[in-house]
Image 1 (cartoon, rainbow, N blue to C red):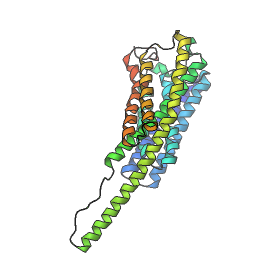
Image 2: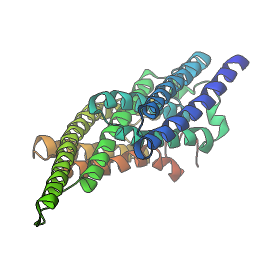
Image 3: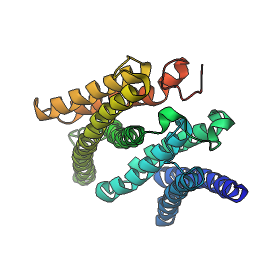
Image 4: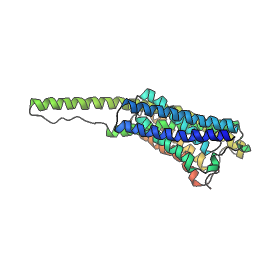
Length: 306
């Protein structure tokens, strides 16, 4: 037992430092030193961070003899792993480091909160309560974490879309010129701006498509997670639905992304309109996942506050 705790402690500290390194180098590479070396350091640190988080989960699984999703701390580890792995897969398709620069600080803050913001006893491996010894619970929490991870990444791309849409070049300089020398300079400037505009538009289209794909992937997981949670709730508490704060916000989250998909599939909306809906969904997910735990009441409080 002591050896397993030591391994978990080493993995936990190493993960935190790897996330700090990955976050700092990604932002340094974006704004200051646009060198491939810094980019590779950031990529490698992200890869090792995801490996270490998965190692933490396996360690708790081996030590506790149960799938590690029984409390808020373990669900945070699970979500961090999904976000890191999903980010690296998204980068392969998007060919941009911007998603890394947005996602890594998010994961770092989430991981820090799990290790420093929660009671220490929540990180101690204990036996499962009878109500938690259910296959429906395992299915419910794991599928919900998968849905949260994919929906967060998809809505994060919506935020990225709005940022790029706001700060991308919108028009070229059409001021009349008097001399041929100035005219050449103006033409070169306009060509540069046109190339930048074309490049940003192409990137915006790719981001828009992949945000839609990720949200489209996460929505069925969210639906299945809510249904399996209702079945488990009936087993544990004798009712499929009790309007618990977590249940209510899960429904609000489902409705938000249902509106997003309806707008794209039925109304044919794309671009800024759907990105705005997805960005609202980003906030709602975090209220659903963490915010309701600050209310200090409800069946999903994980025994933390209240």
